[in-house]
Length: 58
Image 1 (tube, rainbow, N blue to C red):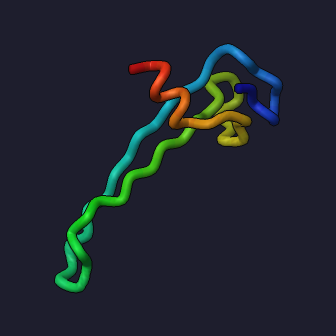
Image 2 (tube, one colour):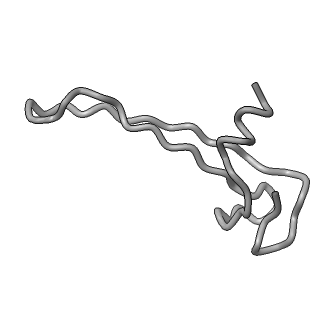
């Protein structure tokens, strides 16, 4: 993986976030998102699969 903004290939942050619906019409299932961010330039323009990065980490 690499940052398409600054060509960094070594330092990234992996963010895992989730939200839970609170209204009565929602089915109660959480929404989960995973993102990669370049630690050099703070760009989210990272060419790579964040789920693969998470699997490698675990």
